[in-house]
Length: 476
View 1 (tube, rainbow, N blue to C red):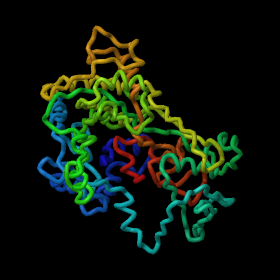
View 2 (cartoon, helix red, strand yellow):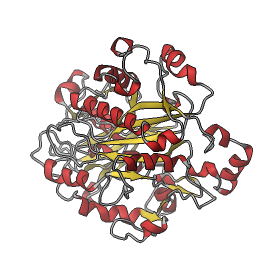
View 3 (spheres, one colour):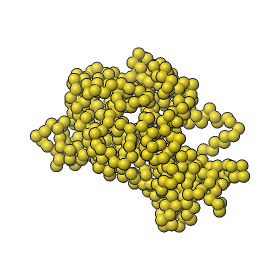
View 4 (cartoon, rainbow, N blue to C red):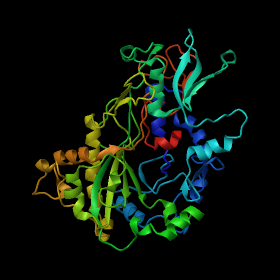
């Protein structure tokens, strides 16, 4: 529910570094504004960067709004950032560097999905037919490489949906970074060597599945907080609050107290970058007011030794996590088919933290986060960093130094143990100019390789991942 569409330099970088003409910030901004119904009184006035009346309702937490107030920890967090020279900004405005209370895609206190915002209002249109529970298994091409038919399974039977090729009908593939690439590969569009290995007839030799990127998040720095200044999320899970949320869309649970409510800091790394240029918003630090270790919930289980020795001593105590996220990554992964079976999951190698610059930036973020814990703002809430070394990294831990002054080897080890996906994959059907050998689609999202009548329209086309929340941009 974090509405963050990326900064001007992201899209300008697409145009300047990847030949993506038509995708500069000034060219995409009107479409962001058209979709937006900004409800924040201050942001509504900034018509240069925000729109009203669109299908997607965007809200901001407001301490004076009893229906969905922000958490008081937000003041502490933003004050700590201010001590280091970072001040409030509109994260969806001209500059991302600074601090922000989150903008959210919510309506009546609950998440507003892209299906609710865009699809449901259009469901009754006579030129739209929606079929759920179907799985597309292949796209068919004629001898001239024109896409003409979609093959899919529904209720155990194989069906075919064809376009009117005589009147310019096209197929638009919008299955997301993973499944758009997978479906192209199953249909014979992809690296020739990989397709031939599986006996799939090659329609076009294109680098489908390459250029895989994802925001990488590390659990960051954990603090014990000795204060009664604010309630923790466990205290908010009351019958009254749940009823208020589900019946009226109001109350503290309507403001997503669990995560992000402390706000976020976007800051620029000092680590040199290789290759294409990007915007200054290299890293994000956000807060989570959670039980020990739960910022990683929903991900593969943590090692029991880590749970017992690192997080265990703090169970039952109020704890705070400041986690860091790489907004721009230099590591590149790939996706390939496991088999020709469309029901067989693909092989995904995300290659997290394989580029040394990525780990160097997270080390820098870790050190900056430790400095936040030393601010007057954090000291007023009694913030004390966890005192025990992380199991598996003891050999790098310097007993003579405090947690805030550990060697880089220990910090790197900790990051590699406690990092995970932000679940924002992008880039497997990269957009680029027609002469870009690493591109899969052109700037109008048409599949290259002399293929006709087929486009890809989702975050798989991103040449480089933006400093935003891609799930919110493409509506998965």
